[in-house]
Length: 164
Image (cartoon, rainbow, N blue to C red; front, side):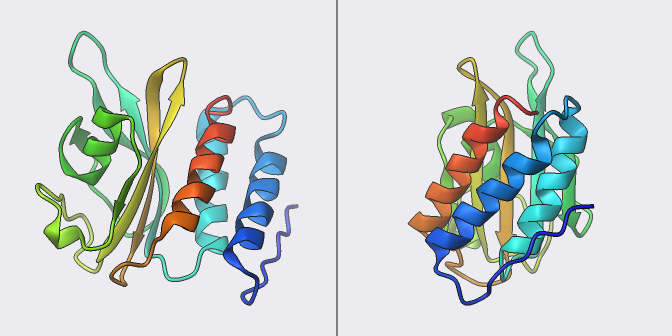
């Protein structure tokens, strides 16, 4: 049994150090990528305040027909397939760069899966120079995510590159 405790009063730096330690413990020795994504999606939900969706979209396909397909997540049902280059997740996959969006309604081509979402953080998971997935975090609050969140989730993506 895993019993990770969070301190709601801890600074973000401490929260992300604890989150990363917990994630490493969860994926250590587990070869199944779906199991690892599922546990990490739940861990993100547990650790991060003011989120309404935490999870993954996996890169699938080949021969120029690659797209993001819904992976393990916690939250309301979500869009199943997202073309690379479309929406916040697709932009992160195409650019291989983190998307930190303070107001999703101002993001050109935003794909609204949950109408309550106001801000979003999407971080690509890259292995061998290729995007294999994106970590997607949504919040019902505008400008919920900042550079500390970006840095913490980018560190998480680096850990997960070899675990999913």
